[in-house]
Amino acid sequence: MIRDTSHQDAVLAPPPGFKLKRRAIWIGAAIAVVALFAGMLATWRSSEASVSAARLRIAEVTRGTLVRDASVNGRVVAAVSPTLYAKAPSTVNLKIAAGDTVKKGQVLAVLESPDLSDALKRERSTYEQLKAEVARQHILADKQKLLARKDADTAEIERLSAQRTLERYESVAQVGVIAKIDYQKAKDALQSAEIRARHAAQAAGLEGQDVRLALQTKTSELERAALSLGEAQRRVDELTVRAPVDGFIGTLNVQDRMVVAANAPLMTLVDLSKLEVEIEVPETYVNDLGIGMNAEVTLPSGTATGKLSALSPEVVKNMVLARVRFDGDQPKGLRQSQRVTARLLIEEKPNVLMVARGPFVESEGGRYAYVVRDGIATRTPVKLGATSISAVEILGGLKQGDRIVVAGTDAFENAQRISINQ
Image (tube, rainbow, N blue to C red):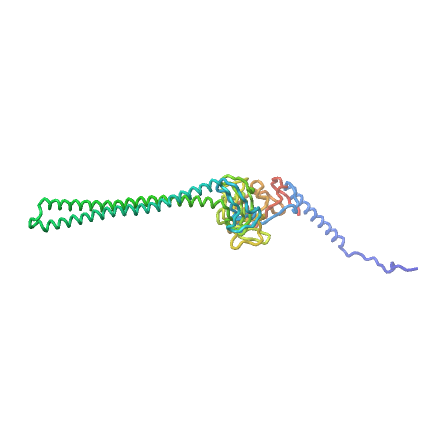
């Protein structure tokens, strides 16, 4: 039989006052539990509801620099995408297909327009006719000037002959060899010859001016015909549609051998060497936008910076289209119509009270916020200022260091005080 250890045990008596101390500990613990329960009961009674802290997002009011910005969506588009048009009613002969890559100056289509071709032929015929008339006018002008000079020279010869006759009469009139009446006739003949010679010289000068003006008129008509011929030739040359830039054919609006009207769109050429971002900006930001505003574009390869280069004056579905041009070299790997996001940097406001942005900004028009103190969220009137993607400016109602509920207030139902359970 195995013996136990009962013969080794001894009963020890508790020290004096042990029972009293244990009773005091139990009483103190009970009082603490009652006090905690009373505090929790008072807090619960003072609040209108209770919400778990896990359902809320609480942020602290701080002071710093607020960057006003706007996050927008956009897509990559070609900065240069000209649309080519038909210059006249014509039949289209396409030389390319949609999607083809083309070089600057390459023939894309040839338009057939009988009206312009006939007009060019008429203008060329008119020009050749006037050219021949101008050459003929040169000949007539020389001929008329020669005839006028001939008459003037003949009159001058007659004058010289009359002068010599008068001189002979004067030499013999002293000795009375000739009659006085013959001498007077010789003087009259000289005066008559001088008058004819003078008039012939003047007539020759006037004839020269006349033929010069006639030649100038014909030359002006020839120049006008040359301008008309050049315009007709230019219009015919425009029937050959050439690529204005390097790129590819984005859209074909016509089919081969199709008859089109004047100014009808033929095709759209896309230049992929120069790409921009077309963004859709909400109408609420329009008053703050301006050409040259900085922007950050988020791409798969990283973030690129740019500037606002164009702004549409039209509002479509509460959106305004704008263009962002990249700074420096164009980022690699961009594709036409690629979807991207952009951040417009509108304004920087230094040394302002601000808090993280959340749904509380939109609730009740941003006029109230729930300030958290000692586990109680109290509905407090506030005044908000400028907003950005991540923060909002506080103009009144809060101070630095306050903690407010920025998300999850939809469960508060506009209660004045809400208890937050940890």
